[in-house]
Image (cartoon, rainbow, N blue to C red; front, top):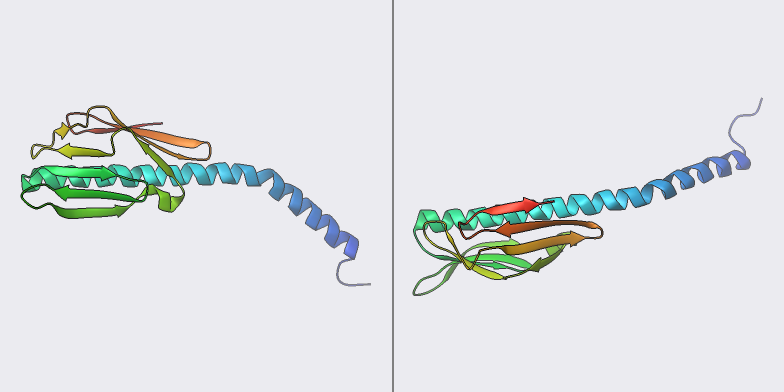
Length: 142
């Protein structure tokens, strides 16, 4: 009796593995895009809520700047002071389109220039949008 496998058997197994990988790769890419957009959306929402909470707790107006590379919140006053900086969604390969890249939040949490500000995060075919309201809320749309 011989032990081991023949070259023909190895080629057959590799061909089957290649076919299965070829069929699952597009599905994996779509899944990876969805997960990256979902994660980036959560990070942008968290950043916004932290900035809003900072305005309420400190009792100072906050300037919020949305950028693909950097999300930044600053207390406004005689001298502005940056208190929150977060890497933007581009670090995950997610693009960001914003209708108003700078909005302000009053000390009571109400948004100034925030009414219907739309943020669209996209990677591949996966996309989500966020909308801020003048009341300082942020809503996620799938």
